[in-house]
Image (cartoon, rainbow over all chains, first blue to last red; front, top):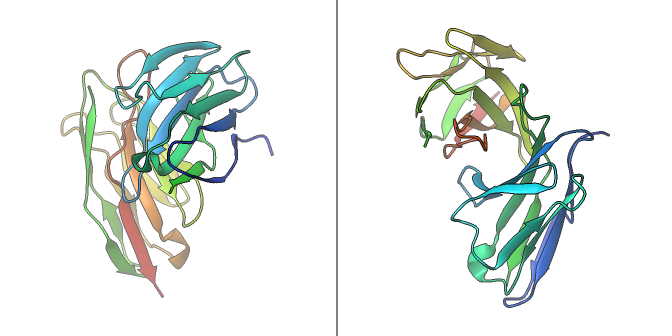
Amino acid sequence: DTGVSQDPRHKITKRGQNVTFRCDPISEHNRLYWYRQTLGQGPEFLTYFQNEAQLEKSRLLSDRFSAERPKGSFSTLEIQRTEQGDSAMYLCASTLGVGSYEQYFGPGTRLTVT
Amino acid sequence: GNSVTQMEGPVTLSEEAFLTINCTYTATGYPSLFWYVQYPGEGLQLLLKATKADDKGSNKGFEATYRKETTSFHLEKGSVQVSDSAVYFCAPRDGGSQGNLIFGKGTKLSVKP
């Protein structure tokens, strides 16, 4: 399978703990996006990378959130000091970039903060 | 920035009925437009796309036409099946350099046999 993969698929954590999610995009896709989806809503943009450079961050991304894409391949999203309001599905998508705008999504990581 | 308004759900239809899910958007310029589908327990899948005015995207019997004049991208299918039951999202691409998708709340479709 050469689609976008995410790990873990589910994460349950206690409030105040740190969590880290991983996304592996489709090989050779230059752009990688993170979105957050809460129950009954559509995904909301968090941040994106062009290769290894993080070029845009939504105001939804508080200081407790950080994302990296160190070698322009996989990406990680870390949430520090989790809060119950962080409970959501975190989605990763990748696209080839300029000239090709289709975004392909991974299955998501469902975070539950207790 | 861009925004999207989607028909409120849930929509319940009988098998073989005609489906329309309305979608209108506001945008600067002429963004690429997409419909995504989310089947129960699965991730978002690209259903179809249109990249310029009057383009018609189609896939799996679904169609949508990019209407510049009305800034709409309504999804249609002539005869729905039970297997089409899912949540459908209309998503224009943001016109800025980041190119993220702007999603509405989605429209849940239930098709009864």
